[in-house]
Length: 118
Image 1 (tube, rainbow, N blue to C red):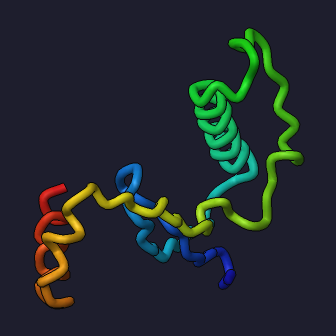
Image 2 (image 1 turned 180 degrees about the vertical axis):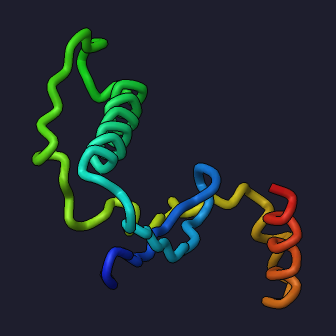
């Protein structure tokens, strides 16, 4: 959604690997920014993306020289909107038997307490 020189949208972010995403509404106020300023912002975003790709070994070798075609990097749908779907948890042998007698409320309290520690 865009109003004048402001853009508002929602993103999903997780604080730590393995945690579920939390939603944040972001508003960008574009007032007073020049074309040159926008190019600096874009350059910084493209460099950060390139460095992340290098760190994740997305190249077969360490690139000494790279050309980024800016128009190829524009994506209308933000990748930050993908929901995190954790892998099913494998319950250790015997644990299921220990938890069988607990009510749903007791299980919630137990696991909420453990999640608060992490």
